[in-house]
Image (cartoon, rainbow, N blue to C red; front, side, top):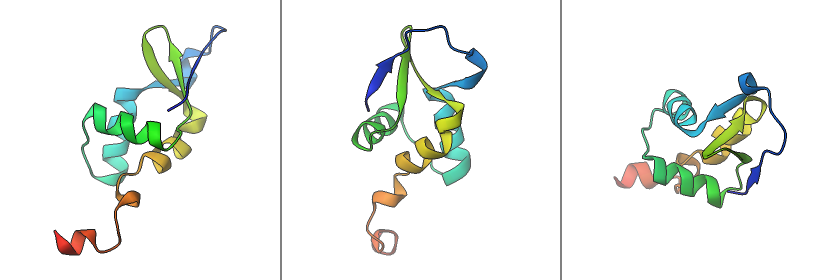
Length: 84
């Protein structure tokens, strides 16, 4: 994940923290993932993220892209569920 530093004061109502994205991910895809798993998936998939203070945040406008790129199921082979 490329994390850019936010250098200007953002509109805080337009930012979402990583824990909130985890909740959204669970609601959309039905999977609960640990923070580290989702963080590394985000890193590999070049999810747009920003550092604001000591937090990783995302812009609300980027959420569809964030959730799609973080989709762990999309990385599995098509027959992975059948083999499980």
